[in-house]
View 1 (cartoon, rainbow, N blue to C red):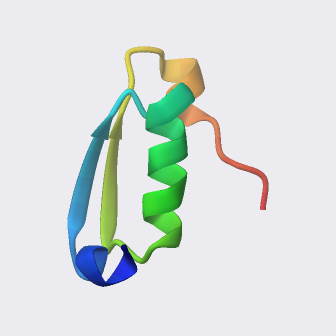
View 2 (view 1 turned 135 degrees about the horizontal axis):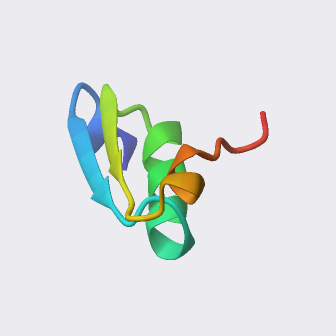
View 3 (view 1 turned 90 degrees about the vertical axis):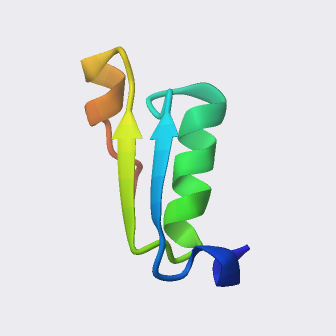
Length: 51
């Protein structure tokens, strides 16, 4: 998957929890150039994964 995402900008809706969050984390690990994350809940959208 990383070769498909290299130098790409990825938009993920529902990125604060559940499947959207898991997708966002995986896309970030896969080398996307930038992520645009959108979620209706500002509290979950602002959470950062542990290092």
